[in-house]
Image 1 (tube, rainbow, N blue to C red):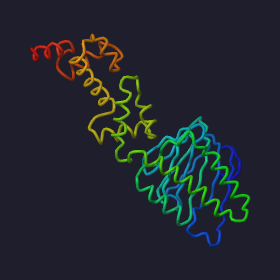
Image 2 (image 1 turned 135 degrees about the horizontal axis):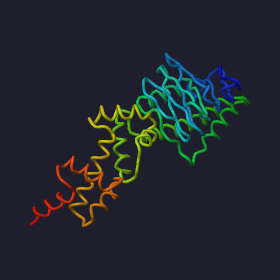
Image 3 (image 1 turned 45 degrees about the horizontal axis):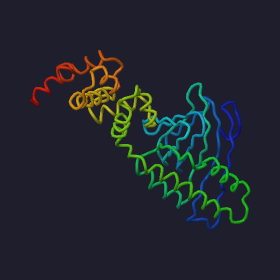
Image 4 (image 1 turned 45 degrees about the vertical axis):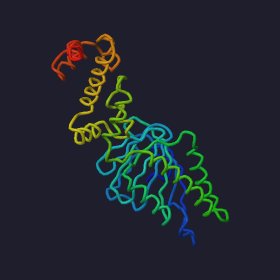
Length: 283
């Protein structure tokens, strides 16, 4: 359906025909490049018998994999494991430019089977590594099919897959989404960070992020952010002489009145009274 240009956008593809005596080499079924508008949508209720890698160069795509929705912004790599129900598409009004490759062969498949068991399906790619050039080279080798091309493809594909694997292995497992979110919250609690921004950094939809975080921690992300800001505020009240207004701004509250009301709800007293109580205990 999407093998030639159409009202959905532009496409270039190459197919790697079966090569005799290629068992054990890294190989693929097909490879290509797409620039798609929001008419583009692939749905595979039963999954696909090959692993799929997608590298987003511009715009954004969306991947739905086993009930979880992942955002695929520019600079991201997505791994869609074989035999997993999935769909992917360009969001409404958007544009998505990406390279893709369906992996085949015993060596490549076994390699990605191992990677898929980690449970991480989206990561960022290395900005210093030219992924576009590597995909273009694989497509060129596949099209020209010069003598020994299958060995050149195996070498290039092996390098690409190892690069990808190292990037994925640098990410925490999918089961620790809340831990990844907590790390981001602690890094950016001073900023006016939004749930949408955190979810995008985790490559998941905001709705899924909120549900998963609440399930894993018992708190909504906003509740956790608020409580963490207040914990930092108690330390500043105890170990610094900063005014309440300064502390409110330091820990990320939009106003001192919001800070004071939040502090009172959490600790049963105002920040100033909290400081006075601490001072009394030290005497």
